[in-house]
Length: 401
Image (cartoon, rainbow, N blue to C red; front, side, top):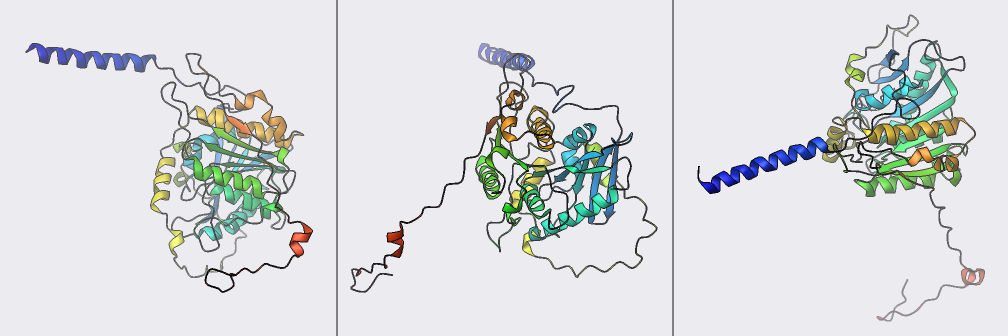
């Protein structure tokens, strides 16, 4: 072997050995807590997985066996992103919630490529009402309607806001907490694609409202999150928080806060494997036929949406989930169901803390802020308001309007 070739080969081997050494020495992310907010929960418990309803008009329900507490189980309604209808995409979070004692309901408000975004709020509300009615007779599920929280991801975030705003008029339980993560999919106008926001001033003033985003792909999610906080005008500022999760590449694998970060696949929650129960004996034999199906372009997933769905369906649970999204929700729910508000939650030192990499280096903390009050509309002095409009001649000699 020629000397030059030999030296190049040695250099290549040295680089590979160095890369392997660095990889072996890279700090690993903090593990999931054994107990408390964001923790593993009761690993010995068996999770019941039910499909309520028939066909496209159905919801999933998850809760552990062993009998519900006397007061019932707190209820969390998980409103999925657009096109993300299989609960396995959120399986990690669902498993965490169920093992913490929650009754988790996921309304399947969308039939992919057959549902209009404008119809989604009414569908979700109808499915939720039907699911709660069905579960009321289940002694192990036993929903406590005084303790209800909503989680919305992507388009599910504005949908959660709509459900909360309509709760009283639709005879649904008023949520104590709305947790909107990486929100998006809001229609920009009456004829545009997306979820049309209701009058969010109808959201009850006692609600705690948390919006949470990552630091990647931030512009659209930031704008949507701040809009949701702003338009829920009846909720006072001390009951609102804007939270940002920060990416951190100090160790391996790196923690990257994207739009897909709140998801975490667990195939144990594959919706295709969850079968509906038997038809009730008193079910009507001749159900009304649905109106004829008419396709419209806003039913189809755009290329961007398809890419995002693919990213969500590949997401894995990491420290951003159990120390970021899950822990924040757990702490927020404890505040919402107790006597605390979002301001006291913000002052809780556990909220922003993301613990440490295996080498002792701190993981980047959550950025937590109280939203600023909306600017007051400018008012004109009374004399100016009453003054007649001034008409000046234009350069062409005719009045300018």
